[in-house]
Image (cartoon, rainbow, N blue to C red; front, side, top):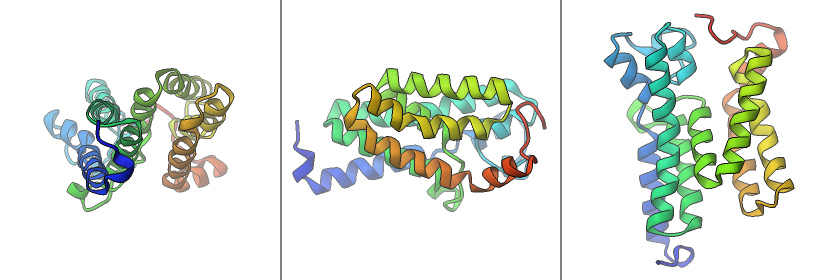
Length: 201
């Protein structure tokens, strides 16, 4: 197995491959396949599953969720199988960046929640499962997708630390910070009470 710590070209290759995989805009693809139009002109304009759901097409939203989560998970698992754990974390991180800033859409992407969850599930399944459970419980209680993502992102580093996944604390903090950064407008709407609830078009 190559020593990626001393192999900068391999690290760069893993980073670029993860980014390109993450840049695949499954929301845009599914919206076109299901004849929903340009997703960027619908609802919030976001390319993720929550905005696809606002069209009322649940199958398209589900497939978008699977695709966006899957690309994060696939990036991690492929890098781990081919190289090392450091590569897996790097691939997951750049896949997340690819979703948020996709080269195929002029670097204007989504919020990255599904890709983040897929990445966390692949990095450490129990930690990812805890993040998903946190998202689900918060979403069921408050019916606000963005709030659920923010709560899950904030708690993930704490969960990683408490349960001894020390190698994942840093990436959990980094991805969580980016989740908060991408949700700046949502945070403002949550504070003002104007954030749309799940299921509202």
